Length: 147
Image (cartoon, rainbow, N blue to C red; front, side):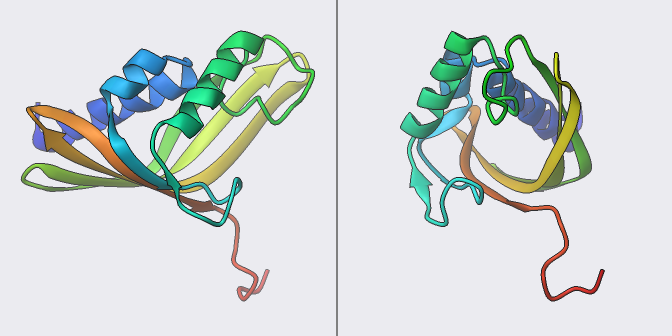
């Protein structure tokens, strides 16, 4: 397995912990001092694991997956992730992955596809890769760009 394939596999496994509401797996792949920017939640930085722990616990309790929590009342939804334009940059024990995350959710209300841009910084700590920083931004045209 090449160095880039190792990072891509880790990244997919990490993202699947979120999609599957797997808190134990999420903690195993994420540093405790995680920092992140989630543009649709708050314009401020979010620190630590507690924010996502709550989301994963609530989604598991409701039987929903990441991406479907924005449709109140819709139960039994399923989702998948696809990474468009994935770019991996690796520097020894540090790697950066940037991509457009496509989130496809199927439910009784139909199929919806949402997207946003992400960068994830991963560091190898004690022999294990961990996500230490995430930055998300909208994937639509900026207001200063013509249609």
